[in-house]
Length: 420
Image 1 (cartoon, rainbow, N blue to C red):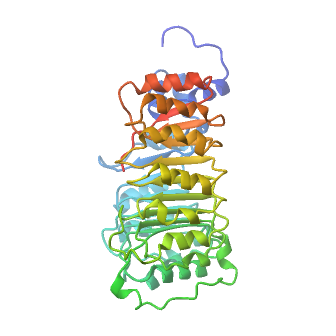
Image 2: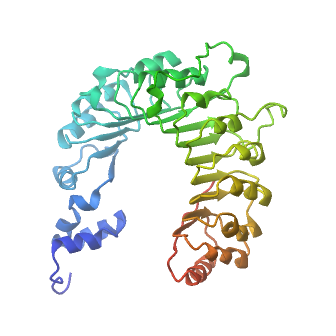
Image 3: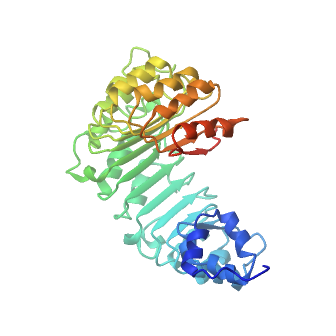
C-alpha cells in the first residue's frame, strides 16, 4: 500500500470488513500484512465453512494456522482417504460441523477423532455404511444428522431407525435418497418415537400403490407426548399420497411445513380422490410457515390453509388471479410471501399484491413478463422492507431504482437468479 493507514482502531476496521464478501476479504487480505492480520480475525469468519479436497496432497502448516486463527469449525470434506482425515483431525481438533462429501467406511472410522462434533452430514456413500454410537466420540453430543444418498447395510426402515436411535439428543434429522420403498408413515412414526427432542425432520418420500398396504400402519394418535417437540417437517420428492390423509395428527404442534412435490401435475391420482395436502393442512392449527413446490393445483387445498400462516411460498406452474385472491382470504396476516409460477408468470396480477397482501414485509417474485406500471404498484406495500427478484433482465436496475424512489428508499432489493 502507498501512504500510511488511517489511524483507526482494529475494531472499526473489523466492522468495515464485515460488509465484504469472502472474495473481497481475500483481496483485502492480500494488500498488506496489517490487513492480513485484521481480516483473519475470527469475528469475520463466523458461520463460514472451508472446503477441503486434498487434490494436491497435504496442506501446509501456514494454511492450517490461518484456519485456526479464524476459529473455523465447519468443514466440507471432499476426500475419503483416511490419511487426509487424520491430518484434518490433527490440524483442526475443534471442528464441530462436518460434511462428508465422499463417504466411505474408512472415512467414517475417522469421525471418532473429532471430540467436539455436533453436526454431521454424510452424503454420496461409495459403499454401505454402518453408523452407530461408536462411530463418533460423543454420540450424546450430536444434535444434527443428515444422510443423503447413503447406503446402509440393509435398505429398510428398521435399519434407518436402528441407526438414528443411537443419537438420542438429535434436534434435526435429514434422510434423503436412502433407497427406501416402505411406507413413509411407519418411518415418521418410528423416528418420532425414538427421538424425543427432534424439532426438524426432512425426508424424501415415495409412493408405491401396490405396496401401500403391505406395511403395518401405526395408529396416527399421540406418541405419549413425545411428538410435541417436532416443529418443522420437510417432505422432498413427494406425491400427494406419499403419506396418509391423517398423517399430520402425529405432529399437531408443527409450525412449519414444506412439501416439495415430484411433479407439477398429479394426473396419476384419481380426480375423485381426496387431496391429502388439504387433509394435512386441516390438522395443523398452529402452522405459521408453509412452503409448497409444484404438486396439486392451489384450488384443491387453499380452503384448508390455516389463518395462522404468516410466511408462505407457492412455486408452481399455474397460479391465477383467482388463486391469489383465494389464498389472500385465508391468510389475512401474511408477512412473508414467495410467489413463483415459473415457467408461467404473474404478469399484470403483480399489481394486485398490495391489495391482497397489504401487511407484507418480505416479498420474493419474478420480474419477467411483468409490465413496468404493474411492477411499480408494489410501492403501495407500506410495510415492505425487503424484496428479492428471482430473475435478472436488462434494464432491471433502472426499474428497481424507480421502485425504491417511490418508497423513499426504505426498500431493500436484491436480485437472485433462480431456476426451478
